[in-house]
Amino acid sequence: MHHQAVHRQQVTPAELDQFLALGWRHFGTYFFRYSRLPNPTQTLHIQPLRMRLANFTPNRSQRRTWQHNQDLTTRVQKAFITPEYQHLFDLHKTRFTQNIPDQLEDYLGFHPEYCPCDTRVIRIEHQQQLLAAHFIDLGQHSLSSVYSVYDPAWSERGLGIFTILKAIEFAKSLGKTWYYPGYATREPSHYDYKKQFAALEYFDWQMWKSLK
Image 1 (cartoon, one colour):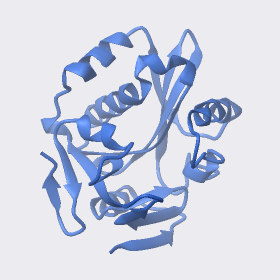
Image 2 (cartoon, helix red, strand yellow):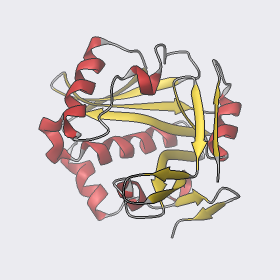
Image 3 (spheres, one colour):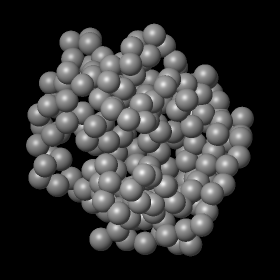
Image 4 (spheres, helix red, strand yellow):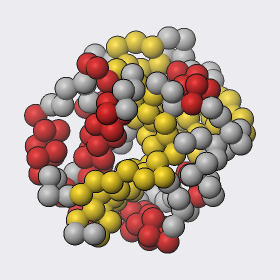
């Protein structure tokens, strides 16, 4: 069983790659990795995921989601905690009935623009209205998703999937090798949507293996 945590105020892009390759994630300056997630009904076994970007091709459903959202505007910016993102976070968390997230800073820290690494935000807008924000970290050879929020009023758009596709597109444009979408579990769970993407590998806490 793996359960480790450490605080780091700053990591270089190369150090971030090393953390990600060993199954670590971070929220703000809190870096962590764990192989099991207890819940009231069963213990879930965590599977860190990564995608080899050169091998990714969207499936039919993902292509439909992509086409359905071509009327939206996408911008990538430095990540800051702003009232606009706080408001979107407050809308987003109304989707939850349990384990309701508290504040955006719990996931991004108070200064994501420089601490602990280079964090950007993918903004999805409709006629200048912010619909979704997908926060990402840039490593030397990797791009990692940290946290994503969207307006539930636009849920029929599939913005969760669309922002991942946009993160993949951005990672490819930067010439990155790996995209880290976060964790899933060996057992069925609400993380299963991440497993729908092609070219995925999972970390078995010793080595990376093909998911399929």
